[in-house]
Amino acid sequence: MELDYAHNWNVQFKKSVLPYAILCILSQRKCYGYLLISILEENLEIEIADGTVYMLLSRFEKLGYICSNWEMRDVGSPRKFYVITDSGQLCLDKISMIWNLTHVGLSNLNNNNYVQE
Image (tube, rainbow, N blue to C red; front, side):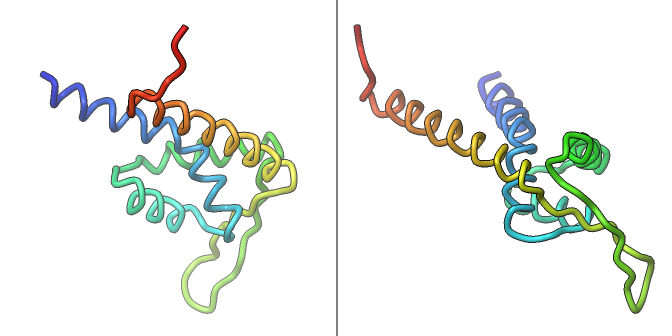
């Protein structure tokens, strides 16, 4: 039972950080969908349904956090590349600040170094 809970928690936690992870990657490089999914799966060590990532990309595009453009290739079909916008970078900066504060707080709790009343 405990192992099932820990496994499920791990999967749900990693899925919950997908928006943050996507913006982190796109702040460093432009990516097409399949490459983005590969980077996420390798680094988060989970399998991600294509639809999950494309839904988030679509939402980010509607919010103006990313933009996309089709790029032709010498061989194969064109690819849709995604890049972060200035407002997307501002959003990422805010999320990063929240992430860092949360990380510090959880580390304190985990190390029995928390504020007591």
